[in-house]
Image (tube, rainbow, N blue to C red; front, side, top):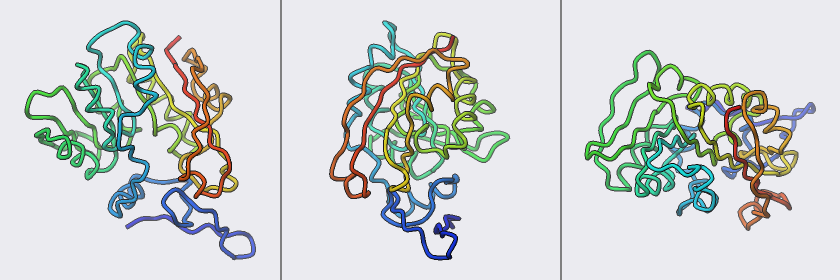
Length: 251
């Protein structure tokens, strides 16, 4: 059962701020159970039915001239980016908090799989049984340093940092730093939007926010800023939606 609550103002009347899922519940502090609830309702319009164009555009910068890398996909859902990375010859490690998302990824891409419980945390590890180099950790992202035995050489984050509660961003950054190799490259997709009108997710994330979370231990380069406003964002009641892409790597 979801623990999402409707936001009320001081007068007791609903503060009707539409969220991405099409209702007016407060989604600023979503838990693992809340995400599971949204997946159970098939409220997954955030799932992109194609490979993310920013991943394809900047894959060479992410790889930094290397081949057959271990690429971590943050809060991966069932993104087609993972199958594309597999087809490019890379090992893929994903993190997702919802079992059905993990199962749907393998089933929709015709990859046979198995799963078993993770030791010491509430979660499961999904792995391919046909030799495909992919594993998905189904657990709270903050538990990753406890369960991941490997460190990764690349990170692709197109829906993690901007979807988590804003108050958790610094903690999230430290969690990812713990799984990075020293030469890791981290491609981060962020958005500029007005959350005073739209309840999220995603949540506004400008360059100052990125630096506040990562600058202590990562070098940061902004790669692109582009207008990403579509009819979907218009339906949220906002008039501007800007995508920004960053490349990070440990200092």
